[in-house]
Image (cartoon, rainbow, N blue to C red; front, side, top):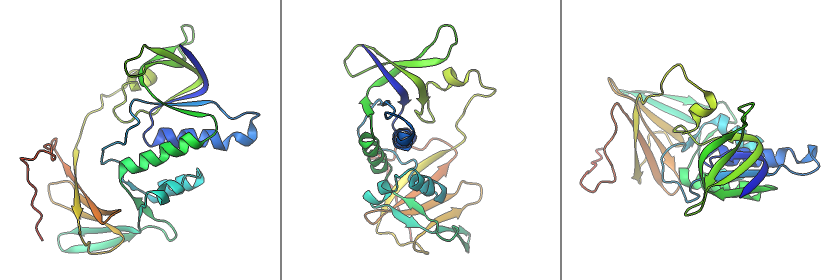
Length: 252
């Protein structure tokens, strides 16, 4: 099966749906017909991850410019005005510029909101499919499409004038697109994430950052539904915190 589009976007995390919506809606006035865009994602189920849950003021501004600010409102994001930085008993408040705020939210809910907006954009097909590889022009080596397969199905070919790879930090296509790199990517640290209930931070509407000696910082911020996220930076890979044999005790 062959499918042809103007643009293919591989990956429907945060960047992919936002880009699909922007390309579909911001170009309408300058074209006779909207761009035909396919947004390809291995799983369209709600992600269960702790990444990208604190959107800085620049990101909030970018969403507004793209017309996607309703994604923040629909999922009940929490407005944060800056950071309360603690080192020992010393503390300072670092506020964002006046008129700007950060937003905190549950990652999976934010991604699902972005995907819904991409579906609503003109001529955008959101397809649950696993991309197996990139298709290159034999003469120019330009990427002109992808090979992909749906669950239990045969490989299919998708072609487009422009192919955008947005499949995240663990991209399996990075080397194919960028070629040989001067260095090998490596993990320099890890984050362990905890959700705390009924917590009261010292400075309301500010994310708390605790600076520790000989260790990475600890960051706490409010999420919707009276929950707080705690992120702890570790030198080594954290244990499986969902393991019932691991207990966490919070002191006061």
